[in-house]
Amino acid sequence: MESRKIQKVGISTLTVSLPKQWAETQNLKKGDQVFIVQEGDSLRLLAAEGARKRLEKPVPDYVIDADAITDPGMMERVIVGNYVLGRERIVVKSASRLKSEHLKEIRGVTKRLMGLGIIEETGERALLQCSIEPSKFPIDSLIKRLYSLGKTMLNDAVEALITKDRSLADDAIRREDDADMMYWLIVRLVLSAQQDDSLITKLGMETRLNNAGYRLISKELETVADCAHDIAVSVLELIDRQAEFDWSLLRTLKETADEAASLYGDGLAALITRDLRLANRTVIASHGLEAKLQDFLRLLFKKVEEPQDLLAIKTIVDNLSRITGYSNSISNVAFNRYLERSTSLCKAVAVETT
Image 1 (cartoon, one colour):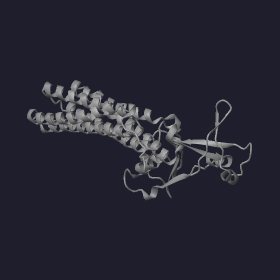
Image 2 (cartoon, rainbow, N blue to C red):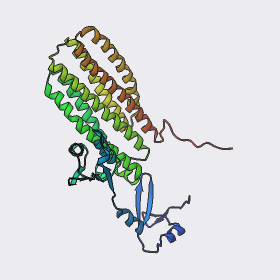
Image 3 (tube, helix red, strand yellow):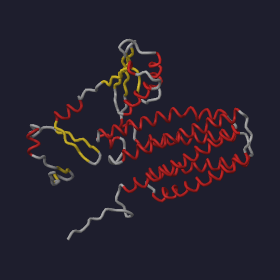
Image 4 (cartoon, rainbow, N blue to C red):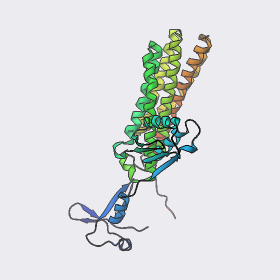
């Protein structure tokens, strides 16, 4: 590692000299251009030729052998895997002809992955291309959108139970595809940033350390949406059977669901704002809500006799418990995010050696 002093030229310009050996290997001379690429906390210096090669780097085709895929759902999962790895061109190819079930999966998955579409198709080949400009998708905005989808789904599902409004539960179920789309987009961008440091600042992240946290948070937010979907399905079952319950039971269930939704919001707010006190309060409150949910289950078994109704409400409570657990987990990630910076609470101190 070689150090260089920063020099000031004129009123405001700062300069750093280039290592002579590197300049000679790059055939640089006075007046030549060099290009600076920001990669997280670092800067990469490229000579003109290196920058040109970087810009002109060909985009490879990733070819999927359709004839090797015989299990249902496998084609969809292989395409999703290529998508999240940041691949731009995916070719699905058969030696003879693409099967109708393969085409059905291909068309279905392109509707659920943002930016991915079929641009060419023949009997034996389909070319899928993804056109995503990372700088247009700041990660925090995508995280907030995924959170908002899950919370809206949860609120609609619980409101549907109280009002017996089937359309609200249907709306919650339909939103799951939107949540999946947002999740896979986040994973694609996070994994792309792991391979290309220049994307870190474009996505609004501060350092490479953020990658693992965003991957974990996005998965938990997507799972919250799954939980809300399952709650909505159980609510539809209860509405369709015209199940009747003691109003006090429903009121208690709604209160606990509202508390779970509130904790879910607090956990994410603590993460984004780095509010350590809010994160700590959320962790403590999540333990209290878990105890309330267990008390509600004991009450449920006393007041509901119909087995199918009992199972449906237990499914709702179990999913509320899972959402509470994810609020706890998100809050703990907020601690990690807070501690990435040196603060008055916790800072690095040089150890004096004797």
